[in-house]
Image (tube, rainbow, N blue to C red; front, side):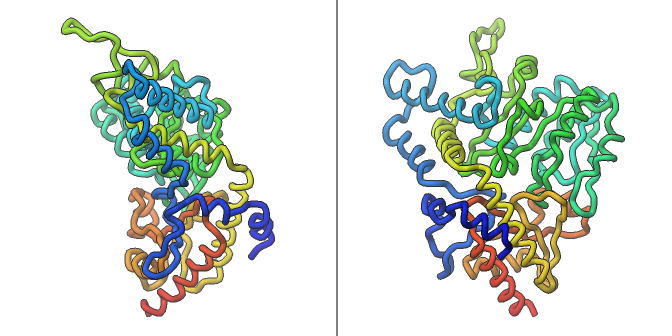
Length: 415
């Protein structure tokens, strides 16, 4: 183990942290679970599970318009969760936090509502070549409707955004730039501050897909100056089907509603409808109340930690993984950006990623295999997909050792 890894292990109590996660205490196929699929979804600490359970056991009611105690309690908890997310991102106000089902819906909301409003024939939306499909397809749908064009920012063979190419693409045609904070497929950390600044200089608005960012970094949307920032709860120790969109008030005020129905209205008549104030204008129908409360508990969990120590621990885990990989015959890393967070994508000579994933699962080791919803970058690299081990703050150096022991054993079956 490297010196950095030893120091990290000494300063970050992973054992105490892991004890808060019931799912990590189980065995899979007769082996203690090694869970390395955190970029797909993270496990939930007991406090999140309890928050959701307590809502359904004690406070279950619809929010905002009830005239009884349960509705009051549900509303207070629901809106307190919004305040927690606003604080997590350092939004200027809670009205800039819109509840969504996750990053995918948040991006669709911006593409549909803001994109349809501003895009015209000949305009461009810039996205990176390593984006998740959720940050490609919504823009394609709207661009096709408006006569605009979605243009890929090139990515190097190492998995880094080509910033020179990005600068060359920025002109008066570019109305929107949409890039991921961290690539889910490669782990590449993009220089989002520079991207935001350059995008604004060119007159474009900038959306950041933060699905893989929030779990690993502290995010300050005011300091970044981004126009939109989207993330998912289930990738940061919260429930599935819940996420949020941050948007600058002046933009959200200009945008038409995304869905119609209850909650997003002030008045309705057959002569016309007036819409509710932010954030409710974008939150039609009964919301995922338990999900919001669970997400609030996940924020509490993250905020209770020393985020700097957690980041040091995760970086040490990844460095240790890369050290082991460099000495493992037949293994090829996919994605070698200078700054990587969370994910280790790789191929093993003589094996298909899907077969490798099954062999590891038989040893109680969970990884993700496939194209990771990032087909364009896989096509660029000329591969069908990868095996991906992705880390969270509850992972250990023993997990990494188990992964490579599992790969060694898998090689014997593949020879």
